[in-house]
Length: 155
Image (cartoon, helix red, strand yellow):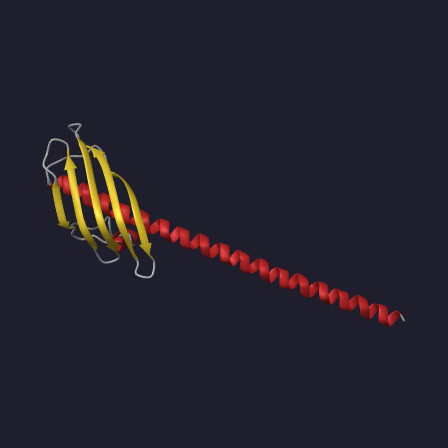
């Protein structure tokens, strides 16, 4: 009789161990799923930040080429839709700044940014001046910022 009771306890212990193991697997899967969501969100944020930084650089460079000095780098916001499979972002980026002679500076990009190029016009508006439209932004790539080459690019 004692053997049967001990066997019963063993069976209950095995069932409990199996249940805990399965629960652990379920929790591990939930943690893995949550980590994937967080990683995807971080990648999206990094891509949007890179796209915004690329346009900020292009706007500052356009101002410099037009003989306009900005007080500080343009402050940019974006409304971009990401295509993770293609590694691109589509939408608009708007940047604002102030010139050293206190004029309003606004740059707007509407188009697609990818790891290889930026397609779409960049329009620069400076108070009391005709708009400057740049149809093709040279050396424009999200990869330049993500890869760290943006600071060393001399274009």
